Image 1: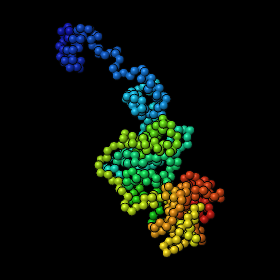
Image 2 (image 1 turned 60 degrees about the horizontal axis):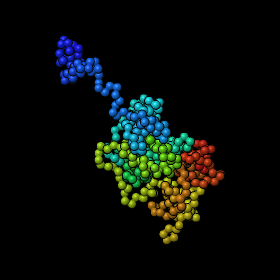
Image 3 (image 1 turned 30 degrees about the horizontal axis):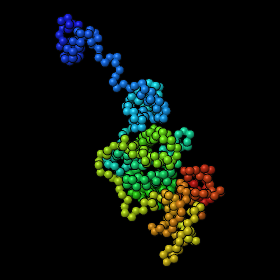
Image 4 (image 1 turned 120 degrees about the vertical axis):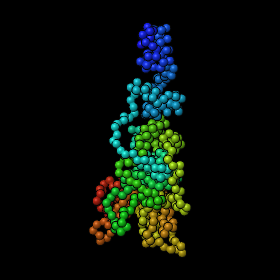
Length: 429
C-alpha cells in the first residue's frame, strides 16, 4: 500500500483505511518508508531490551530465594514476602513467569470444581460466624498433627478467632467462643458442622428427654443456648465454604510462615498468630459489610461467662457432704445456719482452666483446684430393676484413672469396649 502511495496509484487516506490505521499515522509511516525503506515500517524499539526488564542478577536472586527459604510459598505469597522482607519489588506475574521458566511448578494444582449455589453474605457484622477445626501437620511432615481452631465472620470475612490446640474437642470450641466474645461480642448465630462436640448424633432418648420432647444438647450446645446463640448445622462441607476456604488459605500461608520462622510448637505458633499473622491476614482478605451497623451483643449484666462456658455435670452430694464424681472428690462446706447439703442434687461445673465449682439454687457453695480437662462422653445408665438403659448422663473422664478403669482415646471414646458393651452399671452410648 505504501508503494502504491509513493507511485501515485492511491491516496494516503485510502491506504490508511485499508491498513486499519489513522490518517495521521499513515502519513508518519509513509514518510518513514520514503526515507528508510522497509526498515521504516518496523517499530523503533525492535531488538532493544525493555526498560523495565528484570536483570539477570535479580532473576538469579529470585530463583535462589524461591528454592531456598521460600520454597513452601505460593506465587502471590512469595511476591508479598519479597517486598516485605527482601526489599525486592516485583509483581506476582513476574514471579510466576520466572518460576515457571526455571521449572518450578505451582504449589497446588487447580481442578474443576462442582457447581454449588452461592449463598449471599450476611448484611452486617456479627449476624453469623462460621467455625471449625482443621487437623493437619501444621509444623511439617516430621511433626505430629495438631488442630487449628478458627472462626470467621460471614459478612466481612474477618477471622475473629484463631489458635492451635492438640485436638478438636468440646474444650476447643468453648475456648474459641470465649475468645470471640472477649474480642468482639456474642454473635447472633453460628454456622457449624455436625461434629460430635457440637451436635448429638445418637438416636437414644432417655425418659427425661422423652418427657421434655427433645434431646439434651451437647456441652457446647448448652453453652450456645445459655448465650442465646442460634446453632445452624451444615449438611455438607461446601455449605460452610467460607471457613473451609479459610483453612485452605491458612494451610498455604500460615504453614509456610511458621516454617520460615522456625516455629515447631503450639505455644510459639499461638504467640506468632496473635502478634503478627492475624492482623495482616485480616487486612488483606477482609471486606466491608453491606451494613455498617454491627450485630455483636454484649453479655448481659450479671452473666457469669465462666460458668456458662464450662462443662456441666449433675451429681448428688453424698451423706458425708462430699461430691464423688468419677475419681474427683470435692468437699462441700456447710451452708447458712450450719446447713447440710447431703442428698442434694448439685450443679458441678468444670471451667475452661480446669478448676471446679459447685452450685445449688444458682449459689456457689464449693470450689476445687484445677485438674486436667478430659472430653465428656454421653453414657446410658441402667437403674436397679431395669432391663435396659433408660437414663443418660454426661460422664467426666478423670485425669488420672485407676488401672482397672477402661481406657479412652483423646476424644473420649472407648479404646477396648465398643458401643453397646456394659462396664459396671454404665452402658456406653
